[in-house]
Image (tube, rainbow, N blue to C red; front, side, top):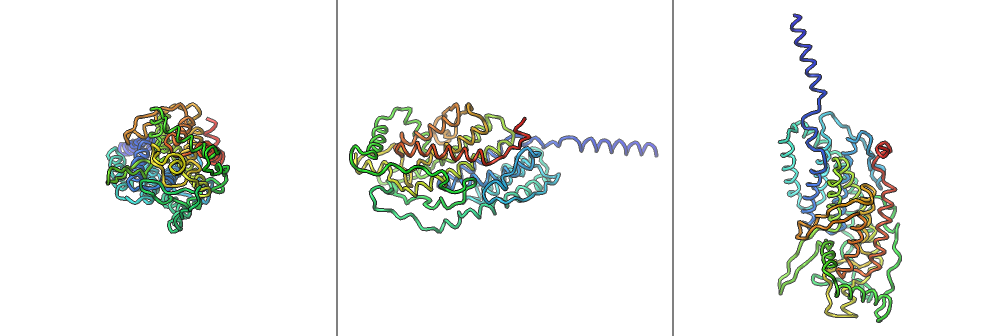
Length: 447
């Protein structure tokens, strides 16, 4: 009898010791690698489905926010939820059982929201299935996967409900942009002469901005077709710069092109060349930076969420100005008043000129990333390698944003005021976001 009691005691101690040990699967997801892979797939699908740059920013943002909201649950109070901080994002509580593996739940939330916001859902679902199969093979038990997915999808559902109130779906039925005959107004450009993209994007609810025109740019230079006028000189500057590009300037222009609408014409044949959006390029930079800094999976989720929010609000503010000023593009002006055979080296995007979208969103993202990684952060931007372009290296996010902005002059896409004033707007948006949104608690900030 005493022997039996001793055996039972030993078994009890062994069970207790086992239950106190870290589970074998706890370190399967330690960094952002799986979310980065999911983001890469989302980028591929965004390109495949040909989403516009503003719409693409929306897809990245809600997906990244969902992943971050699960990460907050694992942060031991060190990270703060975006609920109650983003416009209209209501607070709610989520129960986390001991069977939930939060890094996996975060990934499940990302996949569900991303899948809901695209057309080619089967592509994202297949990628998720492959990722989860791999994770299971690494030792995550089926019951843990099931519980984790259930929590992740609950958070995703809350984010999806939030997304449905941002006026996006209503805006799909708004009237199209009507082309004006005014000589200063934007006109569709060759070779496709596409209609203006997202003329009502300023009606989409921003995440942080109080209003789309909160950081309203000063008016563009007054239109004038007379040689020697201020506007003529701005167009002439674009004309001369493009005609005398160095190889480095040309490389910069193509590196930052990011035009999902590029159409090639060869004889009587037209074919599309699918490219990453400018927001997708900066989400790639965010992932690269997280890897470079060796962030854990929670920090990676924070980086992607905050960067995507900056891009989303940046597009809203930029598009608000674009369809207020509705300014003529350099290609149209130069062909009419300077040289009818001139062409920019990049294809002109299908929306008005002022302000430069690249300048706005790049600087908004750069300010946000600088707040996370510091001023002198060296990174190797390999985002465009998949599209046949070489890497470029930068010593800071702000220098990368400067290059992205001036690339639009080199490409023949923008006049200088659109670049300068766009960059200013983007910096203000980024700085406002950094001051408005708190993700790390004071406890973590003091470490």
